[in-house]
Length: 559
Image 1 (cartoon, rainbow, N blue to C red):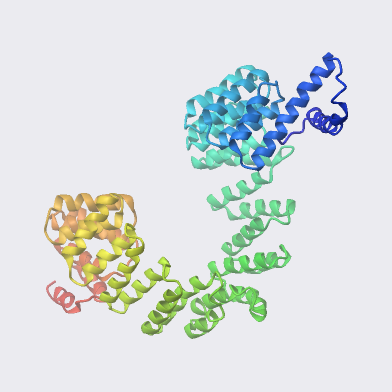
Image 2 (image 1 turned 180 degrees about the horizontal axis):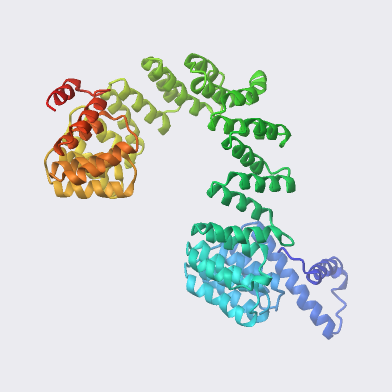
């Protein structure tokens, strides 16, 4: 039991002392007195509590429960009730925990922790209404309790009911509103995108006595959401001034300066920030992600010289690939990562892609296959091998690999989808459709299979109504995907609804795509709308990488 109750602790010490001398006193019974009866009750409480602690250490649930049952008949202090309720809630005995909470709140109606635990017992049953009602009952006797209003607000907040959370937090008297209540009120307001109101609460929280560092952190995050990077920077500066060891705040401040295109100041922050290798490496990755490769390389070079930690070579390889455009150098750097290092699997993918970019697809496949021999049940390696085999135009080999993966994970939707896609590639469209139909039967929200089946049905001229339903569902489940919007446009096109077809195909290309099929569809739909200029634009873009360029050239001639 964790308690600050000095009286209870002193009784424990007294009882332990009594245990030491009890052997000498067995033949000397003393007359009972009021004082000795109190001491005996306290000693019994302590004794059974010690039994309870021992049982919990030994994970003996039955013994612990027996000790608690006796303890709760001895009018124990509130700390025992708290310990007992937590024990039952932790072990899934919610109703029992609530009964103890009711007993405890009757004995100690002013103890707020017991009230909270009673409310928690309802929350664990997803009974938000009764949980809130417990706190409302407490507020009737304590109408100015900021803690109670905050507890109600948190109950709503944790349930995703942000408007109700805001209302509950605001019920507390603003004059007595604590920084913690203001902090969570601001968080709820931010969820509702009421940034100005949230800002007021956070500023007030930072100005109050006993202000929270978390309020500064949340204020900085708020300014980032509002894209007010100058104020965000000031908030992070307050954080690192108050807590110089907070690496997260230092890193966010560095990131902000890079967003503001202040690499020199960001480097200065790296130099004066926490003196740890982890901080330096994390800072370097931020420089890389923001495109400041030259500065990142300078930061990483000292680690490369001592070859520690080896993860540094992954970052340097990324710089060689992205910034220096030296693929061979990137490969050499990755060779410094040994197979027993956690970064090796990630480097395997990078190395295979580098080999593919260098036109050494066979070497990439050999590399991955050798890795699979060492780890035959690695899903990542099996999927990577399948992808490379498809890139090498070896679909039959890819099919064999994906079937080996399915032998391990037979009901995996992603693997089944890949399996169906390969069958489609090798020309067995009937089998491909059967697999995809099974996928959406097992998971009606697997959007990639929904799109596949819908598009395939449309291409085959079968059941265009169902095809439209499937593809629209896919588009709703995965908004902003150009290939799904293209499918939706194409179904409308085949239904002779050229207005909707144009709406969705323009959305698809606006999102950015180099897919020649999408651009061919763009041209076809534009042509139907008698917009030859846009049709020509679509066909010209489709020529780049199209599997049948002659077809596209003919379409251009026919305009």
